[in-house]
Length: 268
Length: 280
Image (cartoon, rainbow over all chains, first blue to last red; front, side):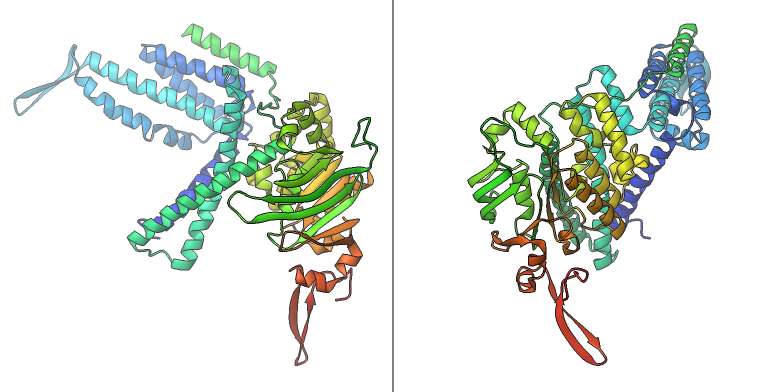
């Protein structure tokens, strides 16, 4: 497979998206601890941990919170290797590069060296500041990824109602989530159809034309679908104000979780 | 089962169309001079080639589009944009008339099957315990219990069609309008859906179906209307009369000439896919 070919890349991209989302759904349906909680209690609890990570200046607290996130990974039956790969790649590594100059900041020197007569010194304060920054980022990212992995996307959207977000926004987001899959399927089939007719070796200019044509075609389909879906909504009684089914239930387990979260934050 | 009510309404007619015309903006006409009367409890089928206006006709019955010319009435009241701006009428109409779209991906717009099924009754103000009761009954009838928490994009065509049916049936409409309900389905799912429609009709519901599937027409029709390429009604009558009129079906692209060989001799005859209904 030629990795520089746009047809192959499009098919692989679409397949990867579907594979990832199916995998994420499987994890969210798993029988672990976080999966068993009411999404609202889970959102509140993990957000409190994130807030604590953002507000604290104590590196030990950040280490504790990060360790806690890893413990939650284990009791939620998520593969630790998969989780670490997902949380450490990109954002924390990026933040590590951002934090690097800070270690040379003003303060008590820890390490000094000279290059071509220019003196460099790593300071205690600079190193602490950089470590706090990186730990804060990785801890927050870990809790967000945990929330995302252990909650079905639509349940996560519904849980946003606790922040008094209008139902219409949640409904529109839910519909976007629903139809993204449909369009990814269409993209995948379209590129397979192109591949079956022209093979993988498409001249660059011709390839650009095909991609442009596909974007226009997809846009046209989405406009058509938009009208049809609106008719389907009208047909089932929609009158401009969406009402949603709420089957969330706060149980003893959820109350205990929230109590434990508050206690941990109070203690640290 | 009383669908139409009102002091001055004594008739049995639920839908009446008189000389109805419709065109989509910037396109060719979709319906030209349609006259139809549909009585309460009837089973009506609309057959015709692609582009003959079947779907447009059904959407007009469901008050989703409105006639450019002529009159479409429901229980004696003319259907137009103005009457649907009355929330009370609109809600009452949607409770009485259910529409199942040809493309289930259009009808299933919520993130999960359960949300899709309960969408209609929630908008129409049904009590939560009543919705729950109806939901439990429907998932047993249609065998879709395992699908409730799944996303519609994870379902097969047959499963999507069953969920689409459930999302309409849960409203408890007196009139069911179905656009190609068996298109693309396997024989077993087709049978399941047809049996369900027959049961609904026995229970007093009016069933209006547009279909290409001539296998199912006789079972789900008291009267069959044939729509032609000129967007008009070519003929209507009892199912067996229409289905045995091979010339009519051929002229309207509902059957094709089929050739095959028997012992070095080539035979040509119309292929109707109706062996159990008619000798062809």
